[in-house]
Length: 103
Image (tube, rainbow, N blue to C red; front, side, top):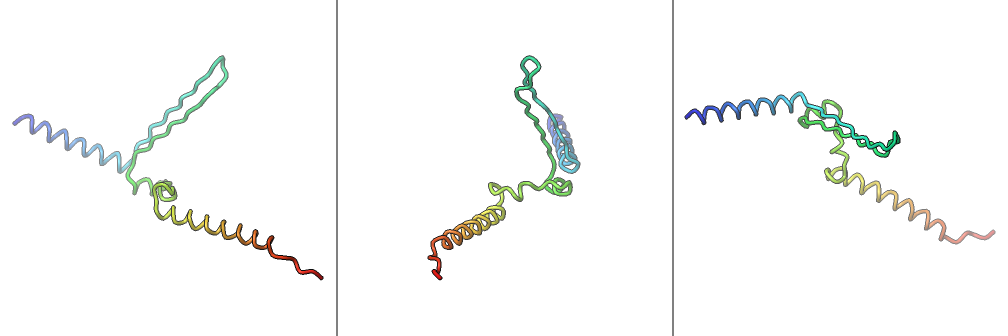
């Protein structure tokens, strides 16, 4: 019986911690620099934020809504832009192919 009580308390604490992290958010930051003889060869900046979608939107972070790999709406917008660009190119080509009127 004591194992069940301990497990139940641990699960409750984990749920509370997860709820708090998603509600408030947490940011983990790290930089990696590779130098050779005081010459910087490579810098990698790592930023990790864990938060709920609502909290992220509240903070102005919503990149997944405009990423065409993640959002069907973004894909449709991208396809529409591509269509408009192609139509413009076709119009230019057609204008070049039309015979000019001689005076």
